[in-house]
Image 1: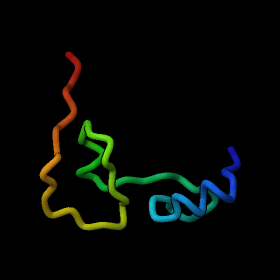
Image 2 (image 1 turned 90 degrees about the horizontal axis):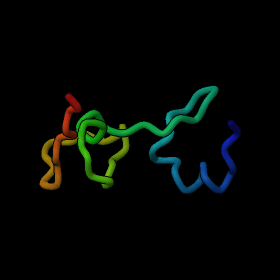
Image 3 (image 1 turned 180 degrees about the vertical axis):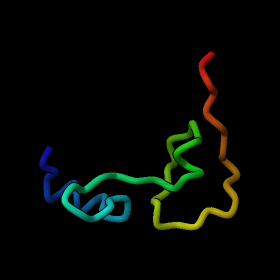
Image 4 (image 1 turned 45 degrees about the vertical axis):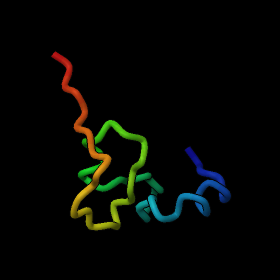
Length: 57
């Protein structure tokens, strides 16, 4: 899927470069149910809004 130039410009902080531009989040944010995701480029020390995703089953 080809991403539009506008999308790339708006989300450049979250995109990993390479053949495919993929949106990547911080490891802490990947395991959180909130929508306030941070880029993989940050170093998360603590997040006051962190809520772990509930596991099914």
